[in-house]
Image (cartoon, rainbow, N blue to C red; front, side, top):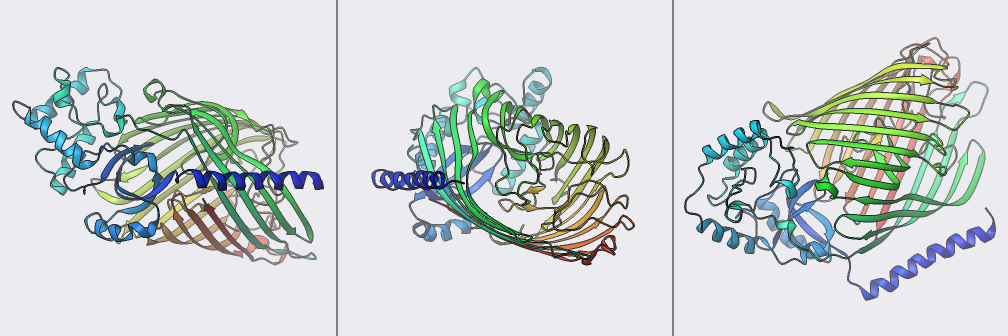
Length: 601
């Protein structure tokens, strides 16, 4: 990189910092700290349990009740200790200040609701309402919806009504509360419709921005090939970035996330330092068009499925989606205009996606509370010498057993790939199947979780599965806000000619700051012993092709997340090489360490 280019990039970031300082003196902070009392996927009706000063909010797909708007965490600690006694799952969150500028608080809403109830000539019989709801469900061709804004025209499922009835018995709601899932009487709309708190006009700041700093360090101590030197790397990286939102109205908004990244890497006696400019996201998106039945996306956005099993990367795309109903869909197509690889040779971005052509279709149906079935269809055409033209179809089922065992969580992923490739590790004619199945049990008031999983990608001649280049097997699926490589942080294999058995134990150390620790054990075996069909980290040598025992790995992950303020993650992994590396490596073991910190202001 030329000296002039470096000076330009450094000056550009200095301008961002200066701009932030100037605006900080003129404007009050756009966000504040609040106590989140409860959160739910379903609409929340006000209750006398909520203290004065609380606010019902509809944010994204969730409904929440938050209390207070403080400038610092220190100011709300006293109130938090009191509120957490009545609401054990209360957490401290960062929220936008404009959400509290509307003075319609719980106390006011309670008076308005009581007044409406007093105007009724007589109370609606609950049994008749339930029968009426069942009749409407059978006779009316209406779309089921969880979005508060479409409750007038759309029905909730019977299991949602039953869930509300159970919740009412558990918390002993006051008699004047009307459940929001009971169908409204269209003949008297003013007397029967529940208050829709978030439909009131709120003032909002059309421009929101924040800066962040993200230091990162990692170390690899890999295997030692016979007659060669140890494979290793050291990486230091500092990302200095800015995120900016512009809201054109309540429906359309623009977002960008760009950063300057100076870095240093020492890999196998080769060193390099440079400064890169990266645009992580840059898109225009709608939220609420056509009653949320069709929203639109144009630009570069981070696309990922819930488990990052099919896709998890930033792509230049055009898309249409609906993520607000029980039946949802996503359709994206596009490319990647420039390289996604920040530092050559690191595992953060295994594959260069420049000029790739892709198509993604995903549908999801929540057939019962927190239980879903999903379908996936993907196609990718790389512009590299590997010339991958591959298509995938997939099925996923995941959820809980609320009536039988509510602390039990399950998932199953099935996939099939078909296509052609010049890639040596998967063969010219690509056909294969993959499976990932797991179960998770939570106990000790959700503080502890034990998870078992098994993944298999078929292998061998003409039956070798390969994962999409669009994914990286890194997700926070097993622990919210703590993202890590769930197939192993050192070996980091692709699910190709591979059996992976895993055991996870996680402990929530602090609910307020989302501090979590995880221990993971992995066992790796090849489906077919092979020195050709092997895809894993660059810090191992090619197996001997005689044994299928690749080895075992133990990972320790700990992290903390405070919304809108900071998050950090520490990872330590040790790999014990198996007999598949006998005769090809003099030192079969490997070590990986990582520390990642991100601070926002």
